[in-house]
Length: 223
Image 1 (cartoon, rainbow, N blue to C red):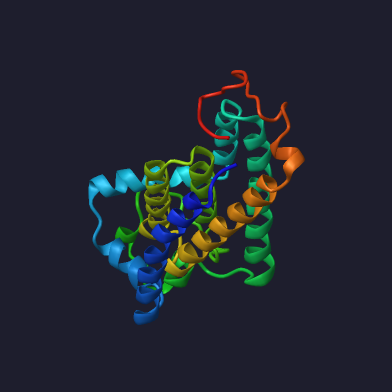
Image 2 (image 1 turned 45 degrees about the vertical axis):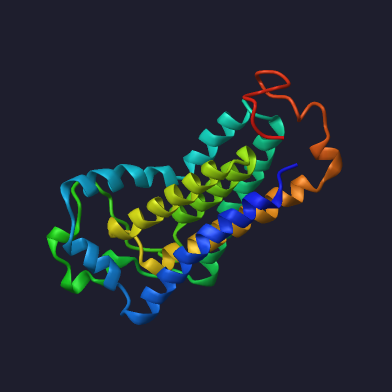
């Protein structure tokens, strides 16, 4: 069973990101960060974040599920539950709690400048809060960190998830507050589901679920 050290490290790294982000949201007007990065873009950053943002797509849950079958079948089932949780929580907040909140493109429609948009990026207008891509990114990041249970993997996962979340602001898709909330939701969803399964003894000790498509040892990571 994974130790709580990985979760503590993940949260320790996430906390200053949230703290800085909340400070920026509190001290600036809504959309200030979106407009700042829209006015300070570079070709290499456009290319990087335009592609990096796809790692927050829901399809990535399926990709990691396939990888998890090489580690332990239990992780595959756990990740399916995490993915369903992410979908339900995201839909609940977007469609029911906060409704059709505007994204930057709609919010700034009357003062929109063509230079704010990046060629090849399909910018959406509705259901901004919270960021679904960020929910997926941080949810998967924590799951991978807990599955591998390695300090440097955990650090890398947090940094990658943060970069994916930032890409949503940079690409004019979300406000900073959408991303920060998505990070919290994705992390909390995975933590609750992962540890619920981890404390289910018959599930965790199942010989069948402890195997993988590669046999008993799998890739040599995980428990």
